[in-house]
Amino acid sequence: MHLDVVDLRSFYYRTRLGRTAQRAIRDQVMDLWPEAKGQTVAGFGFAVPLLRPFMADARRTIALMPAQQGVMAWPAGMDNVSVLCEETAWPIETGHVDRLIVMHGLETSDNPAAVLDECWRVLGPGGKAIVIVPNRAGLWSRRDVTPFGVGSPFSMTQL
Image 1 (tube, helix red, strand yellow):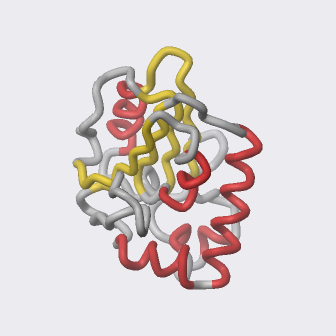
Image 2 (image 1 turned 60 degrees about the horizontal axis):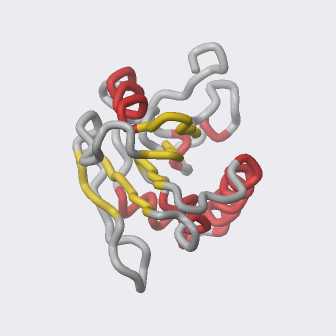
């Protein structure tokens, strides 16, 4: 089951819980990747809440949104960098991504192994990926009122 882009946008940008989750996850990503100067940064699923800090220094920032989810123009007030795509056929050349963030893209996928294959395909030499999924044992994966309560949660060994 896929989440709808309108519901995701409403959660992350219009609710206190969503803004808190966005900030907590983004802070963790920034601790791991403090900068992306001159790099290509891509996000798949609904990773846009995490991409904005990279826009100033990255060579290119791309938001890939799966067709089943829908797409929204992003970022607001700037040139659009989001694109609607098939979850297993991204419009990016092989080996061109330096940093990849997947959020709300794996747990809702009809074919998670193929999504991971696509991640592998687009990552360049030395490229790194962060995959953010609901934890099977976590409280958020048990609540339908958050995006982390939709789809298939993962355990550490499954990842």
